[in-house]
Image (cartoon, rainbow, N blue to C red):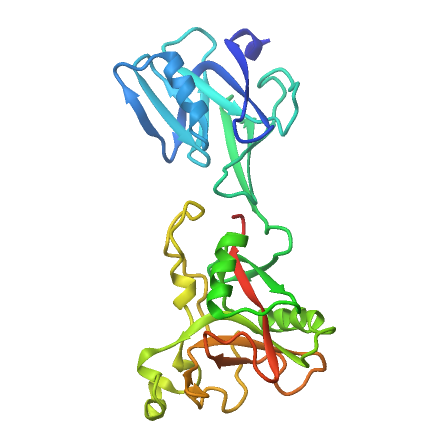
Length: 339
């Protein structure tokens, strides 16, 4: 067969980070339609160096070697590849994961081929691509990215994309704002999250209500994203229109800034774009202090029996973990779908 005749060699390589196997296939050919690609090294690179480079670059799915220059093509950057029937200075490498099959079919003979790329930075994303052949005999690449949420998280659609929310609730614990903020980062690789829409607010409130059913308190509080503006921190400042109602709060304070650590790709991620997920009981933002302490942080109320406070947001003292009438039993964590 044509493709079998030009087959050079086949390698099985175990991924260092998982039990998945991928196949490295080298043939004669070159990319003819692409939107990216970077030169790994030129001049002193060998054929085997290029093979090793694609093997080591997680997102590499195709590599091209012309005898001196090795070009790496990552997921989504190559559209079409031309294969040559005879030996040629151009060599093309395909890195294919046959979706966990230890004994894959004859390489590239049975088209289309559906492959999957794994990226440890996106643990809940499936990066799939399909290799097929068009009417001109060129190999074509089509891509599909499927983003999901970690176990326990629920997916919502926001203007910035798909987003995952998880309400941690435990009636035997109580938390300060600092506890909540750090727990989202350290335990769930997430951030303390805000509420984008009415749908999110009602969903989270119901989760909290169900968790509250066996609590000794009739109502519970859950920490969410948001912080009182400095210029709205004194009673006389509340008369300023800039401190009226929801305007008193910096909604994206925690959504914009992520703690820098090895678990995070970057520090700027603004996932919250509007204020409709925050609904305040009348007068909730009309006081700056409680018992002499500045109320700078935000909580969501839940009640066993839905009363006037259930599902509403309130300002609270950041160091508070319980009051005479409610306890801060948890917090809302969020992260981009796919991570």
